[in-house]
Length: 314
Image 1 (spheres, rainbow, N blue to C red):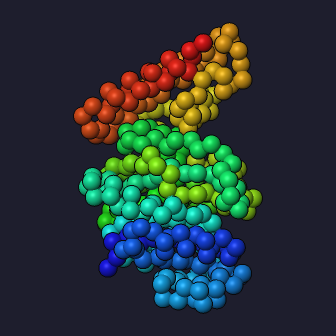
Image 2: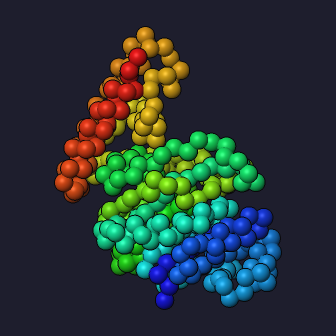
Image 3: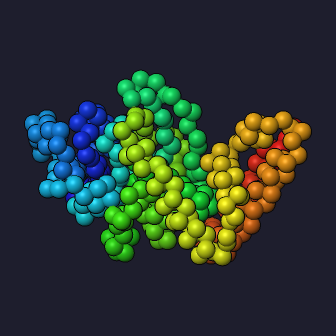
């Protein structure tokens, strides 16, 4: 049995798939099985994979297209490893991705999710086209951010298989988008999370990405998942406040300048202060329902206060 199962779901990604697979076969951590779930591709994926890789891969094919959720669920069901790493079929992993994530799991047995930072590249993976936003590293801040949006990059995540199997966790095929967000929140009920501070994948930006094709649906479903999770901890966020809160949790270094206003605009300064106050209230409610480790709540509380002061500094 391999210690890590890598699940790559794919549909008509022949132009990018070999580079994605090669990045996994070339990992510094070699004790991994690579599972390709072909969601009924029509571009010759099966023939190329069998000719190029043979038995170096576990190749599974859906006879009809079932969608990305079911493709990943098929991979989960086939995975034999103690850890399951998800990888997108158009992205490329850095060589030490699996090693770094496995090391993190070994150091903290309470972890169920280890994500990583992401470098956003052009379609040819020749240059970084967008400055990466640092995903929160610590468990409590990941949970706080997860009340509003996806707190990890799913395609860079490694997850502990035991709670997934024990609780029968699956990606919801009824969600045409944001199904990974829902899955992550389910798994967070059974352990802790961490995002590595190092980049783990090259994210290929192109117009045919699943997330681009379903963007309007994604925002609606993400909001419904978020509202349900907030309700669980007894919090309701007004619609006008949500956009600002989402912005500051995804842009923790943001200041009033990012709103395109002058420092004399008291309305924006007050909005930022009120938003951070609300975020602190959400944090306190979250901490009452969760079990943060000693010192985590105080440290994050202080961090948010410092970010607020930096955001309104003239």
